Amino acid sequence: MASHFHRADNLPGRSWRKRSHLPSIEAATDKESCKRLEDAISAYYRRKEGRGHACKVDHWRRDNRLYWFAHPEDYPEGRLIYDERHELRSETQRPAFEVIFVYCQEEGSLDLFVHGDKNTVTDLQRIFGRAILEVELEDPEATGAVYELLGLLDRRFPLPLEPEDGVEEARVRRLRLRIMESQQGSRNRMRRITLEAGARDDREAVYDLLDDVLASERIPRELLMVQHVGLQLVFRPDAKGRRRTLSFDLSHPDSCSLKYDPSHLVAKGLLKRWGLDVSGRTEDNPPKRRRSVQRVIRT
Image (tube, rainbow, N blue to C red; front, top):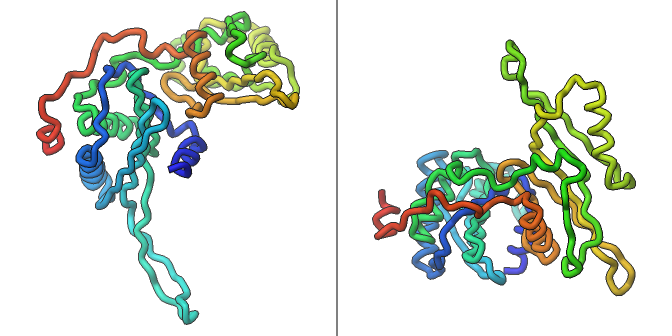
């Protein structure tokens, strides 16, 4: 169990997707619900990609979060190996790949780790909703963005800290900006600017770079949209005088590299306070409760 949590905490943030605005529903955690999730994931990948003929799901609780680790069967792989008599022979293996669901009833949130496109993410969220929460999840885009980053264009954007946070400084270390085209004939070109401060630069370095970019007045500030930001927290020294730092990334609309260890939970709370995490502010399209999850899975 501990090894599973350790691996989840160290998986790349770009493959995690957060879904908020979920109702506060007690998740099913019995063996039958895990079997429903196994069967649904297996059926989905068999139909969509021709793999997933077997699937095993393990479930554990970690504080106020529930984890489901799914391991569907991947495509078979053939390779040459030497056996115990040092003779060369062919062997076929059937590796597994990983899908992880993390549900928090208190927050009404679902984090999903999966390698796949936007449609795969949405499909697996719906599968989880049917099998575990017994709800039919609507289109996630109807609930709006999770992370709103435009305010970070301004170096004066407030990042307030409280003594109980244990954090003495918050810094913006990287900005990736998209230039929104306004001229006719631009053909919807996608142009980006990435600004990044060095490890020893002061907290204003990124914004000094931004001022340099805008100084020519060729790019109006109002045409810039923040797509990605790299943040860093500097924690107060511990008993031995050591300072810890935490660096993490946010991307609009719904990508975050934070996990669930204590320092990461502090960072998540700060994102809410600063108004960068806007999830849960509205509940315009609540999921609809299903009468029979068994009926849903079979359809």
